[in-house]
Length: 304
Image (tube, rainbow, N blue to C red):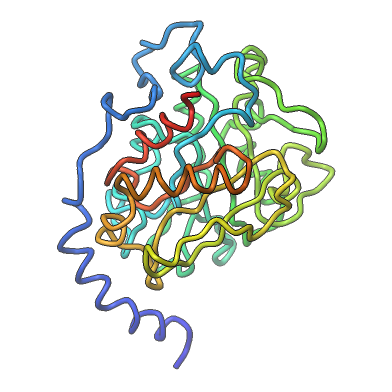
């Protein structure tokens, strides 16, 4: 059995479940998100605010916790099969998501956002990145991060960033140097932090190898009782901490998010990992961010 056929056999039950539940699995956080969300695209955020709050302006980038969408491109709104999110990239940003994992592929010469099999759903890479550019242009006091799971060449990623109009927003960070404050990044208009899960290239200093800067917990958990805070990739001495908080049974599903995205389980685990790792969870990564208490958890982590 070839790879595509194998995955389609595995997918059949999940497709049925998603067809019944993905689009009705919860409401958007919107303005009641429990984090000082993006302020929306109507320009309502005060000039002195940084990511929605003046209290973040003097905090370094690594001193803030950010709500993160796992496989952000894979969403029900755009018709993806077995998605990890309900809403598209634009809606995620409008709702308060400030970090996104994006998987990139070259399919027959076309650069796409996909998840494993592009036949299950895809979006042109430049188109998806352009949604982020539009948000940054409309929200000049917001800092956003991308973490690419990249299966394309670094030059192809760089080309897509440039073609989407994002290059001028990128921030190149030097390993070992202190991170700037959000206020400094906003003043310099370098409000896009771009990481990827493979080594970068000196030609593109803004395209950073994440495990030079961050560490993470394990992922691919199948049940809540499997969760722990043990380090996976990256050195725990790195300044950024990525908390993987989602369940998977080959693919994500709303009913799995229902099991782990709510307090007290969610906040208890986040606080436990903060204590065990002696590190603030900077990127709190979930499936179906609109289900449960992600924004409340991030707000709690950001409140001394």
